[in-house]
Length: 301
Image (cartoon, rainbow, N blue to C red):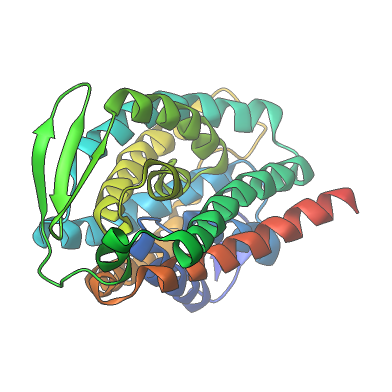
């Protein structure tokens, strides 16, 4: 089957299946899977124009709602964190989309940027896994390993300066202004990469802020969903100013990827509370570092 905008010819069951598998595992950690789907498009499908980033945003828009729905239904959506992610990343996504088209149209340079971004994600995940293995406080073992299937998020305080909540009988807190600042920078990288920013910010919340992955997953996915909508719109607008370049998303390919991701994210969100967090992080870490190493090494060869 030919996908006209990208020029890719492939059996649609392949992108559907790849998106399903990736999304099933990554959605457990609050990541849509777009950060791994893009290397698949670039390396396996040979889709390297700026529109591949826009197509990745389309995947997020179609796939994420099923996972978000599951987290909301199970009352595991941390809304104050969700809005902080959206407010912080949205301006950055617009800037990132412009940088991708103007400064990173070359596939080789873009692959290097992808490798750097994935290296950061992988390093944060690896650091967190190792810290849990050797230095995990006794008080955090219950939540980090396997929370109760009926665990719910209870917001204790929500203000512009501080948000505190309880999850599985443990208290956590974060500062919204700090989240806004980090998410703005993350949004720029996410806009360039075509992942909405949530894939980068989720490891930050877990490894640096110290929030439980079971609690941030829904917020991260929702933030990615909203910013990806903005990303699709902005890439479509920019395509009018760069008629000689492929900028608009390949809607048909994005829909096929999105259909697989929709099913995968729903199943992943439903399964997440039964899977130990170390397994979730280990899967993400190995996948991310493998792709990052391949792209950075290839840039210098």
